[in-house]
Image (cartoon, rainbow, N blue to C red; front, side, top):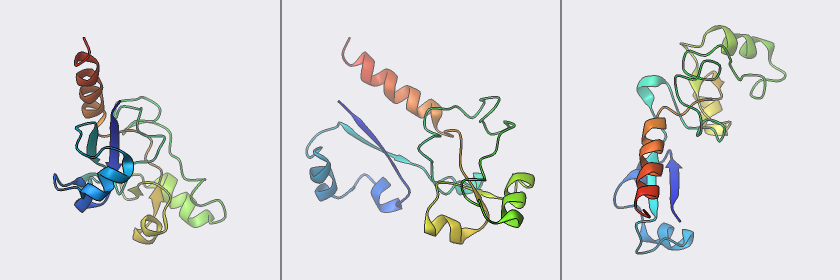
Length: 131
């Protein structure tokens, strides 16, 4: 077994990830835990949503240049923010629905994994280690 843990906390992404966290997760003293950064400020990404993990950036519908935007979940009662989210994709932030992320600015749900190749590499390595 292996756990890929997508984190937004820079401390959690360091090689010195606290041992108590590893122990709490049941991964103390093992290499079965891989910490993955899910913050890409240069791409205006604050965090990954759970729906984004399995989709590559080049997906025609959900990808970086895809034709779909997920804003309704974030602004069901705010027409102005909903409209801004849908009509200004290059200006809005992307991430999961959290209080902290909503305070950062107009937000839409990230629908693709900007580190999809890293996910595939990790899965390939995991599978190859058992062959």
